[in-house]
View 1 (tube, rainbow, N blue to C red):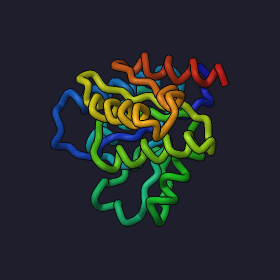
View 2: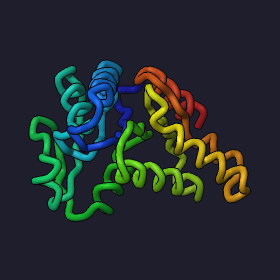
View 3: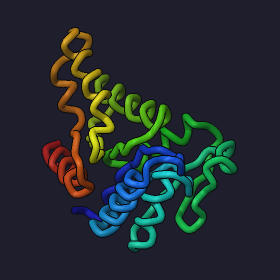
Length: 185
């Protein structure tokens, strides 16, 4: 895989989650670093965000954190890695998009869901063709995929929409799914 590849991570920032989610984030961070892929993420040192970034950094990987100023005390920036401070969430999301070739979505809350859905919406509108993989080990995203199927079944979006993302259960499978889609573009 190209060392110039950057993957944006969307994930939860809560430390109160099941430890298996934190472990998955750590394994993803290590896997990205070992593959020579730069991790682009929300900049925090908490929750899955912090676990993935810390693991990537400790494994010798390149990490870029992007955080809006108003979240500095809440998400506590991870100072050990390159980071950029922006003023708004819109700037954060745009910079994360601009700095990335693809997206991985780990379990998370409403913010994670909003970020992923916005990127899918942009792809549906042909504003970008960057691939996305949802990564979970316990069917965390199953209700989301059921909703997407319901939307397609209702003819609100075409069946081809479901090809915009992959659903995988290991960090290695996430990287492979994204690489296949990048190679086909």
